[in-house]
Figure 1 (cartoon, rainbow, N blue to C red):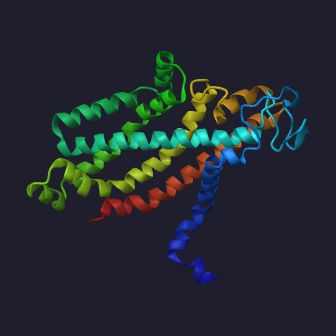
Figure 2: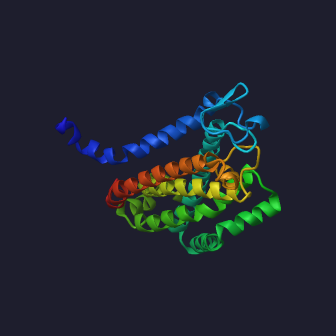
Figure 3: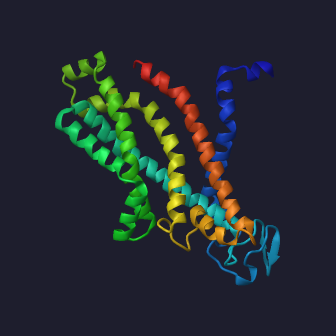
Length: 286
């Protein structure tokens, strides 16, 4: 048993095993929400409003209680996990692709392209995310797509900065300069020689950004600028639950606990990846 625990790979993964387990449980809950949810998350039953966990109203058993409209809280938590994970994952993927491509082009082509891309990134970084969300919602209206649009606009500069800085360093490596000298075009050099060396730092940024986007989505939904009723969202559940905290603590506490565990596990995994990948990636040679 001691030899098993002493294995280097196992020692590396054991500290983040709880975080991976929690993330895996949330992912499974989101994927299997249509089959795990005991009721329609939007179905109202006013006779069963604000029922505590484990109670029964009519023919329905509320395992985690009900909210102010008699909706099953467990079902709304499961579907809310689906919303939070899908929005965060979509925001991470889209902003990572846009930001990484822009940063690599700016770092490799230099000149006017570098100036334009990085100044545009600075402009978006200077705009408060909440202000941008209010402007988008005021112009386009609140919706899931507009929420995703806000997340992409506010987060792509993070990837652009990382990709730009790493590309500047990698572009001076002998193998990159040789490939360019031998006639390889910019896109070929970026795809074959630059991008593989950027995957480590970009993965670290994406993991840390995932937790931030979950919080950002919940915050905007809490303010009424994100996911709109009757769609389940942890942020919206927190917003409605605060009005009934004294009489029905479970309405606001349970989505808050889920949000805390998801963000904490994502940040723990991101911290571990920072320690594992960043030094190896920066010093690696293909």
